[in-house]
Image 1 (cartoon, rainbow, N blue to C red):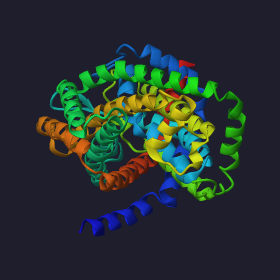
Image 2 (cartoon, rainbow, N blue to C red):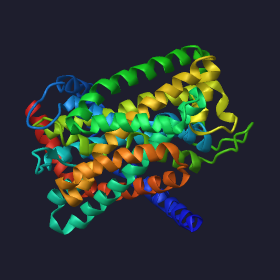
Image 3 (tube, helix red, strand yellow):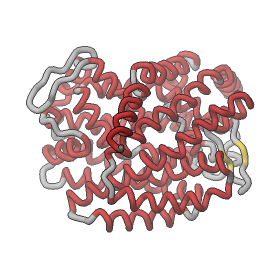
Amino acid sequence: MLDTISAYISTLNGIVWGPVMLILILGTGAYLMLGLRAMPLQKLVYGFQMLWRGRKAQGEGDVSPFNALMTSLAATIGTGNIAGVATAIALGGPGALFWMWCTALVGMATKYAEAVFAVHYRETDGNGDHVGGPMYYIKNGLGPKWTWLATMFAVFGALAGFGIGNTVQSNSVADVLSSTFGFSHSITGLVMAVLVGVVLLGGIRRIASVAGRLVPLMGLFYLVASLFALVSQFDKIPAVLDLVFTHAFSPTAATGGFAGATVWAAIRFGVARGVFSNEAGLGSAPIAHAAAATDQPVQQGLIAMLGTFIDTIIICSLTGLVILSSGVWETGVTGAALSSTAFETILPGFGGYLVAIGLAVFAFSTILGWSFYSEKCVEYLIGVKAIMPFRVLWVAAVFVGAIMELDFVWLVADTLNALMALPNLIALLLLSPVLFQLTRSYFKKQD
């Protein structure tokens, strides 16, 4: 029975992550980037200035604009940055990294649009908290006749969270701590469940507070470790970059344990893993940005787009360059094991431990970030009375995920991610005139 269901979902996964979806994701980002006249790229430095200013509240909301971004990054900086990049290269070849960059560059416009709409169309719930995201900008922006689309997003988002944002993450942590340090899956699951429960009791304010401290520290840790590895391989970087750009447009031949890859494989896995990593177009991040204490939707959009830049252009690039410069991408190893092998090859004795610790912390923060996303989806569907039962179920799922085999859950969650993206991308395209008008008005006042 399970094999039949798995085969069906696998077929569905091939459809929803097929050419149409990849074109829709890239096309939406490209269309928004053109409509904004490349503003996200031109205003990158300005965005970092707004981020620095956003350490304090700038208007009504529940968390500072800075902590809203940290909550978003907590959810996106995870297994995608370590295992996702490795999988993209292992299946799509070095050229996949180029297509991850392309996804991120146009994804900055997508993430900007999501956050602008999240703040512009947000509401206040029965607990007095600010809530927003695709379900709210679909309902309030497109009108009552589109409510079914908002409901679709909320259903997919609530379910996807338990997979990609919870059980998959806790399972990854349990696996890496077991293989590296010999910790049992059950002990790891229990400790993580307790820690997650303690944070979740405080709601978005405590999640954002933890994320505001944890994300910068873990990001800096991984940045330093990766740069240290790359400095020792500095002479190989030009050849690695040549591999990336060459095989973005030409097939990668089979060599060693690498089975070879077509250009389409490079595009498919580069775009899919890029979206998995930075979530631009998925519709998850704007749920966090809707809680920002700001009265300027455009300013929060400028802060939000930095998430895609930091996640993919910086962190994923570092992982990819370490893997390619180590040469182990040709061995046939894939996933987190490939990243671990790469770091251990360049930094023998402790490289593997760096990846293990990094993956554990990244995955833990992802569980926190995604708990808020799924909670708000459930709240939209059922109401504030569902919040506490949801949190109990979420904590229980952390432990269950740590002790289970999750190949099937990976497949289901990956499919649900694509189904989340569809309603969100439709809304972004239909509401794009509002985005362009808000952006023009804001910068006209600034000038």
